[in-house]
Amino acid sequence: MESTKFSPITKLSKEEVDRKWWEIGDFFRRNSLWMLMYCTGCCAIELPPAMTSAYDMERLGMGPMATPRQADVLLVTGYLSLKTLRRLIYTYEQMSEPKYIVGFGSCTINGGIYHDSHVVINQLDQYIPVDSYVAGCMPNTEAVMNGFIDLMELIKNKKADGWKRYRDNYEWYKKNQIDSLGEVRTHDEFHD
Amino acid sequence: MSLVIGISTGLGIALCGFVWQTALGGISRKVIARLQKRYGPKWYQEFLDIFKLLSKRATTHGWIFDFGVIMALGGIIATAMFMPLTQAGASSIIAFVDVDNFFIFVYLIAVGMLGMAMSASGSGNPLASIGVMRALTTMLAYEVPFMVIVMAIIKIAGTSSLSGIAEYQQMAGNNWFMIALPLGFIVSFISLLGMLGKKPFETYIAPAELASGPMVEYGGKQLGMLFIMHEITVFIEVSLFVHLFLGGAENIFVFLLKYFLVYTLANLVSNVNGRFKIDQVVVFFYKWILPLAAIQAFVAIYLKWVI
Image (cartoon, rainbow over all chains, first blue to last red; front, side, top):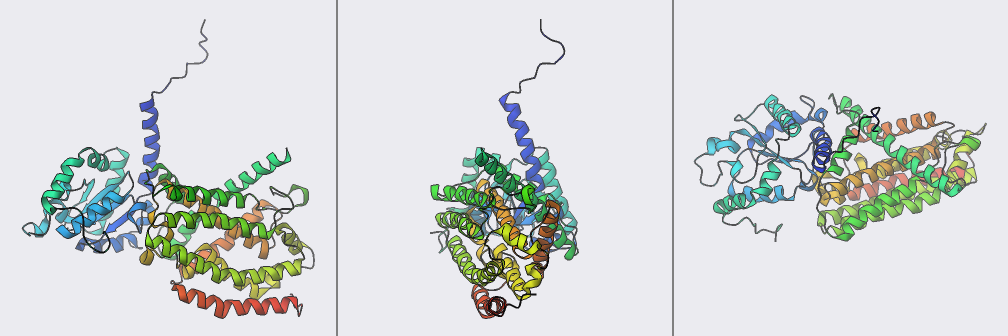
């Protein structure tokens, strides 16, 4: 006869174990976001007050990093010309997974004031997956900090899955990139 | 049997050093934040960073790249195993009695450093190669004055064992070498800043210049292992300093307190300084620090003026 004193240990399936480990990892990932700043646009001017003593980004565990390999979150601050988009795609593909993107300003959402320019892309989401947007032209620093907290919430709720979307829909993204750029490969002294 | 106990004690010392130094790293970040009128991160932020890095996926750049990281971490853990923590007769915390010689640390720490240099060069990135070259040049600059002072200490104490040096300072009638050799203390503290890679001598990390130097191609797990290695390296270097100049410790709390003071002071000094260029580092050490070290060694050994 089976003892009723101890309830039998429920055996977790492999998916559940993986999910639990992933949640533990998400706790660490959202509390220690290292940023790579791709500061080509004017929204970049909002980052120094966010990093220094006025708003102090470090209390969220965020900090600037020097290279794409070390970084977790890529900040695209504003408009992207076709020339810089090539470099951005290079940079994004070098980052180690899981990786996130935050788009700053209206330029990354719909082109902003550059919507009719012939060398500036309009929707960043067509080329690389964006997890969180900070709207405004330019967003003020409270909005930037709020955007980072939003990104943390998204990671917590498992909705910041841009890197998975990029991997699953790689052909679609690649097709968009080639349609706009002609060729993603850059020819200069750093990339050949 | 005693070997098994020794090895497990040694691994325990390495683990304690890692935990203590990582927590202290977070506390120091908070201290620095207050210095800059910021709130600062959580005190356990460095643990979050390391575990996050270990949870990420990483690319590889060939087996030298991976093997070098493991060699660096293993070499540094092996070095930390020899570190004595306290000197209290039979109940002192030390893994291998009578082999805590100063030169063991000098030789073994090179294994970890060379592992990291090999791995960084294996990544094939020119910035990593420049970083490794600068790290070796900086090492050449700060090691010579530091070794001159350590030789003077070994001559005075009559032993090169770290426990022996600490016990010599604890004896009645002897001052700590921090007071006995004041010039030597200043020289070694400046060398310690170079060893820890702190600000005035941060030439080989230089995020704005070299994109963090040797670490430029690391991400994910390899970077996490290098962070663990870096914490244990800092533990070894600051503990060496505590034993050589601050008289070791009778119990573990005194040791941790002395360690905390030295590390926080180094951090405070580092954060109000700018960064030298690499040629300025070498010229600074050979022009100003090395003569000071030579004067101190001459005064202490030949004139026997020890306070």
